[in-house]
Image 1 (tube, helix red, strand yellow):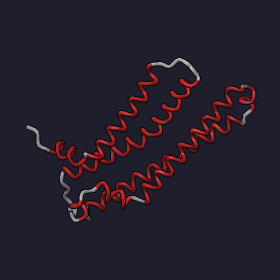
Image 2: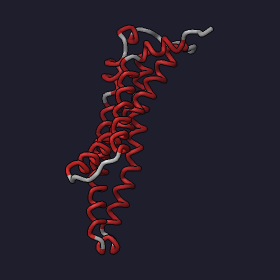
Image 3: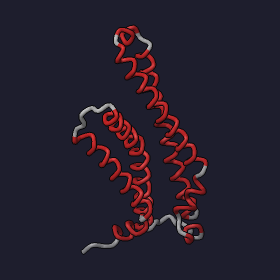
Image 4: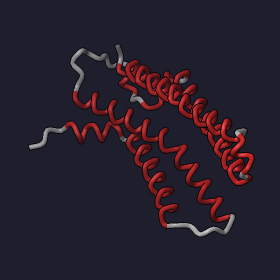
Length: 176
């Protein structure tokens, strides 16, 4: 088995995991839909607009996540080719994997997970913050700090994916 084939397998596993996690989003959409058409929500006009917003955001999140996960699964080979070095398609993996290779794979998996988990939260928090600004409602320091933290996590994930080989090389060195 070549190193690039292992990358492809791991990328497909991540895609399948994300595809399965869309079930939770469908649950949120379904429960908000049920609440929207319940008798209690008809009494309070404000609650129906909240449920409609939850359904819309959940629908967009579902579309994004299911599309992204499908692309990850079906385009795993091209993704693996883009993130792998040229030598990875020639290098055979033995049963004894090098510590650096294992660390590089683990860094890439963790970075991809952090990236795909943070993107929906970032856009949701950004939308909520923009809504507060447009409606001239007071914003709290918490609102901006959540957006900044999400952006920081995205940057760290992209950095980790880009420099996974160098990071794994640094982490695999023996320390005295």
